[in-house]
Image (cartoon, rainbow, N blue to C red; front, side, top):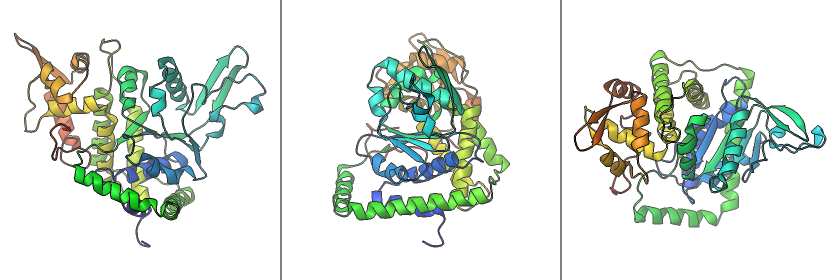
Length: 402
């Protein structure tokens, strides 16, 4: 492993110790590049990541090596007053979590509990995080007065798909997180049983391989960090690849915008997500001992873009795009069936029509929609619907689908 790049060594470790599927292995790339871009000051934007998957999909084991790194602040969960406490005593005794986050990565072991909590608490936690994203925030209370904080930090939070419910209702508030999703493909029982066998065997030597796993991750982080601190230089991004990332930032910002109480709204501009995606590409490039971003880096960016879309919206986009050279005309009933939405997709389609992403075709019986040709052309130029590691594939079970 001496001649392998830090990224290659980390990928090998995830493959060996966690036995992840080919579709899940890119989490190694995403975690390393996200972590590095958060602790090295030359990367201009904060990287906040949801690590999304059902219980038992190795999220905790995948994050575990990062928890013990000195630049990590790990918590099991977070309360509505955890980040900004509103403490009324001496400022030096302020227990606000943000006071210990500057230059670090906040890792939240389980964000799912928040999604099941009181909605006002959910909004409070997410609101404080949004306020802190740009590096400066403040909190005013009747007892403590106004307290201001400065802290540039990253966030990596493990959660289940419950996060999609919150995002579907609150996307218009301005999302700061990108996402990676585990276990997107159908796994036959036999494959699941083999994974069980792996977990059972690894449990016998858990302390040993966990220590090796941690050492591999820490060594990789140290190597990349020290190199970038000694020579703070970002890699070159070729023009055509930069153009693809710009398109992906636009598509993501448009298609993840949600209406407010069913009323279409203007989409986010996408400048923040553009910089986040660029940082992911450049960080991965450096972690692979290169100074020119290439297609392998952009492939990971495509994966992040697809995974950041809530599942229903990803399915809607894929169904609107279709499988041939022409986008199909789909009724709302068909879209609901394909997306397997538990509620009407009509407000979403009205939102997309308002943003001129789709054409609205009025038939006598029902309203149908078709992806606008210019949007399809942009998707093609970015390779978002071309085969690759970014798309979940339908292998066996038609129920799993897209």
